[in-house]
Image (tube, rainbow, N blue to C red; front, side, top):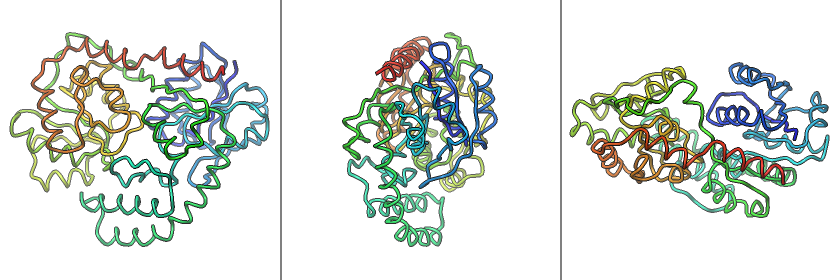
Length: 407
């Protein structure tokens, strides 16, 4: 089978790491070629070529905020392929592929980008709303997003007011562009690979037409940590908690800081590491609360990142919106580290409550209770690692993907 992977590669985020992992697991099972943007991240493309997979570059543009990979110079690649695989949010590219050759196109779903033109602000950073998109919904979600940024000190009241006015004008415009794009996408994509059951359920509730399409839920394989750390079952845990989701309010760093005011009183020698939050509003918020024993650091190189995670007493991911998957807690579990996460979206599918960590509501009081619970329990590294492979088995995930493609 010949698979052409369409991947913009413009940034190196969780979806791109998952793509690299899948390419590595697929390369000995099928024939692969990659078509990416001419401005793709060099680390991303070099890692693909190091696997022996041919990488071809093409001009890219944005359409309604989605990357579109040009195919004029890549028609021979499409003619070569049996299947085209959209690895992230390159959805409009499907139509261009079909114009060259009517091959099956499958699309990975790592986020909510397909079901809302302002997917970065979906739900206004709040609870799951199972309603279709509308102009008013876009405006409301954006305003909810601005309101949250203002409340946590990440946006001034003047800027929040200015953006609120712009959102009223932009909402209907973005909605009309999105509707046109969605109709084209639905006609061009033949199957879907959501990274969690929750993600697919939310997609179908927003766009019922997706319910009739073939799909397979394929969890991200999460083999990246093992490139840098070989877990020792007897390695003792360190005396710190590890947060690695950055300053985005959707990840709930402010909830963690509110919880930390309680946790730090009970565990006075315990530290909290917050990666990617140095010199951000998160650090200012911590100072406003007069919190101690917090280490704010910039984004860490992969080796340092995984070794710091490996030694942590626990990893915390206090997201306040429905996570599509939740890569960080699986990374922690791969290294034998328990994870405390909120029960939002796909997180509840990948963390076994009381076994590989704890689930919490996105409230600071309950989060503090679950963090203290994980500190008081004696976890076994080897047991966590074994359970993580029961929850997310890389080999089985790849087989599910290939079974969908074969259909």
